[in-house]
Image (cartoon, rainbow, N blue to C red; front, side, top):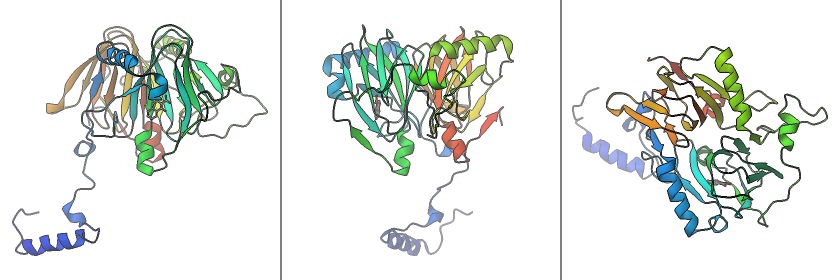
Length: 354
Ligand code: 1HN
């Protein structure tokens, strides 16, 4: 390549204007496919502080608007490197939602799939998905599959907070965005709480029932059970140098991801453990449940150290190297677009520095 100005520069410019007017552009003047994600990914590693920022601001919103009027009282986490519409990372939406005792977040359904990760509250708030209520406790992971009716309520005391994770940017890329309000505030209940877990969550399944949907038949994955599994494995399985001990939430009928577009994980990084530098094409959102520590993220002039503690939310973009250090036994929830990238043949990871 030469930087010398071609002798027909003016002629070329006239040509570019001419093709532009015909809804065309010369590929040779654009870089559609840069050599590395870092030349293309705009989102940046970032942390949202729950105790000092998210919680007080949501409480303030609680004095300004009801859950019903807002439909959903959610603060969207906007990655500072991305413009509107709000996204936490290129492919993922995340928000922090608060519901107050007696409130109603009315029933609706939409094509984007959602997950809830419970952050704080007394265990008497619930979400109803497809006619089944799940009471929510901190650390629980709950799915709201595409186009399932869902509403939220709170029968207990005090404010109740959870993180919402949705695949909205993926759906937006393809186009099939659908949303409907249910004609009443509450969608009807067809099954008692705990039904889906009883049917599919005991390493058994009803022999006379088929399940062919792309998501898990289990709506709620209680924290106690996931945590207990990690506690067992810390003593009985080698720790992974890049993850510590990490389990993924699965659809028990396939062994694959609980959701078709979003992967979700719970991970234990034992006190004093330092993970080795890891890089993956996946876009990942973390929320520590217990423990505190540091995230070392990025490289060169973009390298940062981010301190995290329980209930914070932090995001690591595609192909940005990172490692974790825990000062106390740390249990971290995370969700990512791994399963979507895998289905498209795009997912890569790099264990090591290369
Ligand atoms: C939604 O429906 C919920 O149902 C939460 O709780 C967050 C963010 C964007 C679009 C729809 C919910 C959402 C959302």
